[in-house]
Image (cartoon, rainbow, N blue to C red; front, top):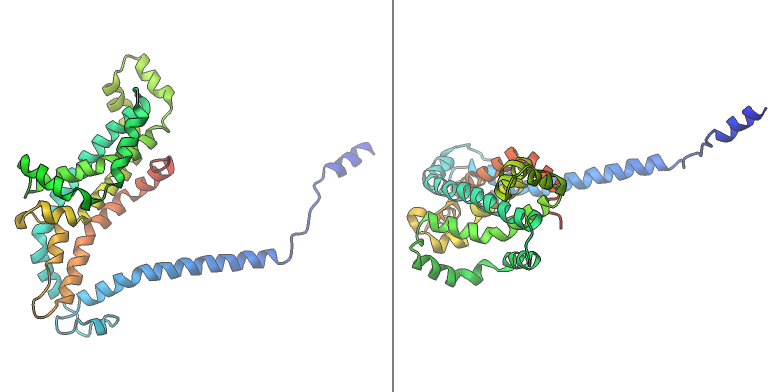
Amino acid sequence: MTTTVETLQRKPVRQNAPSGAPVRATVARVVKFALLLFFVLVFLIPVYVLLATSFKPLAEADPSTAWMLPANWTFEAWKVAWEQLSPALWNSVKVAVPGSLISALLGSMNGFVLSKWRFPYADLVFTAFLFGMFIPYQAVMIPLVQLMGSINLIGGIPGLVFAHVVYGIPICTLIFRNYFVTIPDELIEAARVDGAGMLRTFFSVVLPNSAPAFAVVIIWQFTSMWNDFLFAVFLTGPDSWPTTVRLNNIAGSMVVPYSQQMAAAILASIPTLLVYILLGRFFMRGLMAGALKG
């Protein structure tokens, strides 16, 4: 009798769920997906206009018919856009690839020292780094031109890479510093006990565990350098113009070649799209691991 009573007392009491709960959950799910679909369509509208216009002949490309599909499909605009844009695409590659890698390496070193190898006034130095993030491009144009002229780096790609690396150090340092804070101190102390110095610990222990942070920084810097227009237009000459400057100059004097402009815009955006596709998985891991926290 006692066992039966205890069994009845331990048996959980089922509470009847409100009859309207499943309906509300279904409605909420439908509203959520409807909103997501709406925002996806909003973001895809410009892509549709770009693609539809790029395949139209020059006489057919007009703002009044931007929503219509081409009556006569042609690749002529893509051919002309590639001929005009290909030298600039290669210049952008020479700027964005080494610039993003150098920025990531320097930012990782700064972040490691500021998080795991602290020194007096480290927080003050870190705050000074962060201050550099809030200086707009327009505020440094004149002193930057004077500096580049004095060290003979103006007018070419090396000067543009140097400017982007220096300007990107604050955000790269912030990302790596916040990511390295999540690495256990015991791992660094174990390396010290084994006799590893600062550089050996950095290259042998920290770097192999920093792939997500590197992915975040490389994607960030590559996109910033590839899409930059202001630095490129006043620090480089016509032979070194990157994609954004050349894209701005694809315009007719009498007739605006909309189809060529649309094709060139798609060509200019493909490299950054490929970077996101190839490194997107690591980018999300870096964000989840704390690369942009703090």
